[in-house]
Image (cartoon, rainbow, N blue to C red):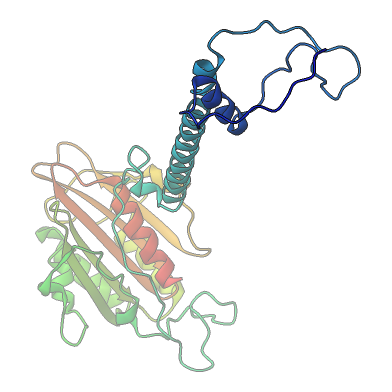
Amino acid sequence: MTETTEQPQPPQQPPQPSAVADAAAEDTPQGPPAPGEETGTSGPAEDVPAVAGAWTASAPGPRKDRRVLRAALRWTAAVAVFAAFGAGTAYGVTGMDRTDVPGLATHSDGRWDYPTLVRPPLPSGSPGPLADSNKAGAHYADLRALVLPAPKGAEADPALRGTDGWLDRKVFLAEIAADQREDMAQQLTDYGLRHIAARGWTMPDGTRTRVFLLQFSTAAVAEQVTSGVLADYSSPKHPFRGAELYEPDDAFSTIPRPKDVTVMPYSETKPYGAEQLRTAFVSAGDTVAVVEQSRKGGAATVPFQQTVTLQSELLA
């Protein structure tokens, strides 16, 4: 080896490509060690071939790393947005009613929208009509408050309002076939009819409903009127006006009813002309309910069953 002597420093020159490469190398991850360079690990370093123009190949390194990082950040943000959207959608669907979700709406089965039924209060110390202690089966509550209210969308029938809520028996008898009215009137007198309360309405589809509550002195008398005056096994004993042929409505056999309440339903059979009539007699305590529904082209089964069932519950 020869000893070098210190030479005067030449004027500073612009950085050459090798200097640029050295400066860039300080800011970039170091590559594999050069041949013969110590690696800090035991064993010889691997031989890595030199690459010509190393400064031009190493310079784009940081820009590539930043592009990858930016792309990763964008994908992370996108995933977060979609996750939040999906969570919000799931919450919105689970928070909706079944009828609000498209494709899951429950179609109406024809039932009407009746208000919540509330029985009128009993006088202090008075039993209900079907209580064991009430031997006469008397309804001590106001009979006028026991008539089923009209459903939503109904148009009230003013002819059935009566005077102070009490209906003249002539209005009820007008529902019976003309040649049967006199006989019916006499029988109601013989059995001691006390009061009639009523309500009627017409629905937007044209279904007309009439509900009459006939009150007698005891439950025993009401039962006799139901089975002896109003109803027979196969049809009403006194046909209603415009309806002559009936058959029992067997669909009611599967519908639960309050204990000690008798329901005798009928449907007018073909040919029934312009309208079909459905009617039912409900005996509960000292009162008999007469429910009629008629509609041009045919009276629907579901609202008829619903109306009769709700009126039965009010009287129980």
